Length: 302
Figure 1: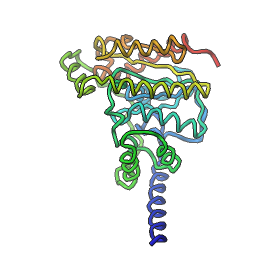
Figure 2: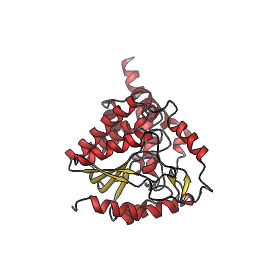
Figure 3: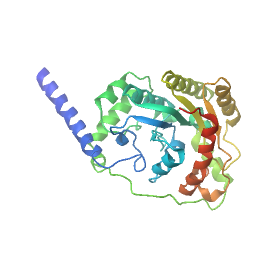
Figure 4: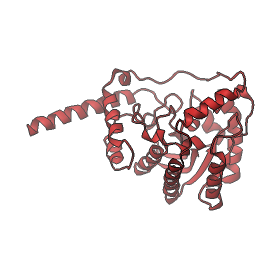
């Protein structure tokens, strides 16, 4: 019985790994996938690591990653994860994992916003890794990481590697997102607030997520990496909880722990957005020079 169990586990693990090797053989890069680990190759030294939710991932989407690197004048690894499936806790894990695997960065650009800190729903998601290739090192390191719903997340991570959808995963071909808002709709904005905070603002989640972000900043600093907190453009006055959020970010800057770049009011033309807080491709192209200028004003030259 013991031998049979060992053989069964070996076969299951082997098939899971082989399915990931097959998918990884396709031509994935940060501009044509929402996955993070599928973009990794032999290169391990980067100028920038982008972390956060969809506001970070959006800089690379639709094959715009090369434009991002060109504008910033450096290499970028974008591990931002959108689609509402990844919270700050797993973004912190991605940073730990990359550093443990020998990756190096000069700067971490962490896209942050009040919904990212005032809610715990994304930290609770169990589908976070459904497009990540199976890796024993990733699995074993995550087992040591404190996370809610950890085992359910890892079960889902492993099971998806046996799905046909996983084997059929291919690089996205879209090169632009030209969807644009026709006008600013304040009713839609209020509806979006309710989606972002279905249970209202959570001070408990805010304090917990602040602690995680502090750990992320401290970890980066221990490796000689400077963290830049970035808020991307929005079409409304402010997110719920904006004042408290700004106070926290500015306190980190005052203590020289992280820089804070607030670009929330940098673009106010609705045709540069596909919703009220996500830029379309023309909007990304418009904001990049402003991001570069803001970074140049804050970052020491290596």
